[in-house]
Image (cartoon, rainbow, N blue to C red; front, side, top):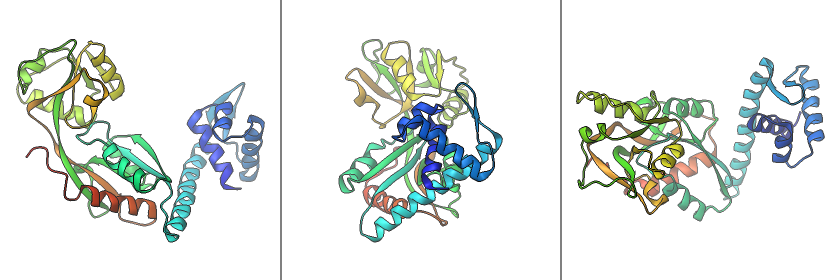
Length: 301
């Protein structure tokens, strides 16, 4: 068994297609299939369901896949540790992020890329619960999530800000005279919202219910991108965080603050306290503390 076989297995999980997995790994499809069969022979297990095309993983394959991710993360951590001993910072920073928050991740990524040009980034949109689980399993290096789920006995935290809400709209289709909107006005608008159950949506629903309002959104989606598409098409407006960079996507997009509208849990950058954690994660966390330590202010202030 070698590390490449594990990479091939993970690539197959990412693409769900033999040909695309081979292309991702820069090898031919027959080579990919042969190396995966060699892995199965070595483990004496069938990992992949095969037919005319990829049909998924067996139960054993799913279990081996989880170990493959852990081993590959440890391998990458070892490489990053060796680079750190040489005074370098290389590798891929795995960052999990809640989909909507009053924080633009480019404010972290840009200074890191300027200081460490060999650094790469893998961004995952996840719930706070999934981020904490991913950090615990060493599947993520850092997490950007709401801190009400975080036990600081097990995680180091850089508190960033509370998330205030605003109404994202396209000025070609909607205009408002007010500088700050109230919830009663929002209840009369065609709204696009994140799906029920997501942390940001729960805060929105609480704000409506506390005022005796029961709006029926025109559109619901788990994808921020789809909500922005709908807003740009004039289908609806969307309740979004302030100061997260959405207005920069188009000259027609604006975000108006909403009165008394905030996610009560503060947002923070989170690093697991326990080993193993990579030198890459530790250094990027230290850099984030330097970048944001004296500059980030509570948006409720």
